[in-house]
Amino acid sequence: MSMSPAMLAALQSRNPLLVHLLKIELPSKTIRLVDGSGFVLWGAESYTAEDADFGKIAGFGEFTEAEGTEAPRQTVQLLPTGNAAIAALTAPNAQGSPVTIYAAAIDRQTGQVIGEPDVRFVGELDDAGFNHAQNSSLLELELATIWERLFDDNEGHRWNDAFWNYLYGSNARAFQHVTNAGQKLFWGYNGPSSGSGGSYGGGNGSIGGGNDHARYDQV
Figure 1 (cartoon, rainbow, N blue to C red):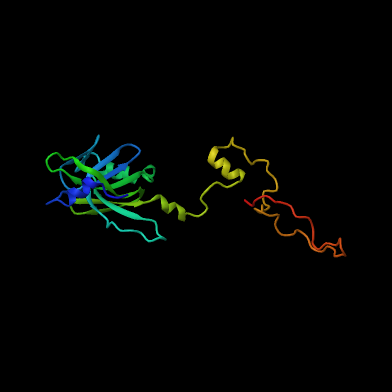
Figure 2 (cartoon, rainbow, N blue to C red):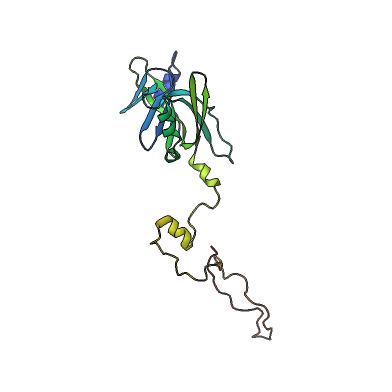
């Protein structure tokens, strides 16, 4: 997506003010932070330098383009307010929470965003690491994109009773009485011959083996 004309004009002006906005949508709360000091207003949303529950931004990883065979990743360093903030950000149910990072040009007088912020990263919370130093604590969040799931093995639904019960409970019973589920189903043709031998004759002769039948997919 191209940068908005208003933001581009603001960045070309003398002494522009550029900030990064961070939005983390946790199950319990949406965190909106701006790097630096003060606050930023964007429509109905307000981004502050420090969140009372979760602290403030310490820094970002380098914003780079990923190769064609790589899924984009990013890091965010936070200075949390305490153990409760660390526990919430590293909880299992926080993994997968949507995270968005914007670059925005700001009006120094009003604190309003000029134009539309430029999206720098869209992804989800993947992992977190905690480093405790003297008089400070730093929490580094590892962010991943949805494209990373394409590298997962065996993702999807398996056509067997055990996996269907795992998804929908013991009452699903979708494949409880399915038989011959270990056979293969060939798509687009009948598959290789299931037998050998045959006959060859004159005008009405034939070459071939046993009968070909479509077979069920192996699970």
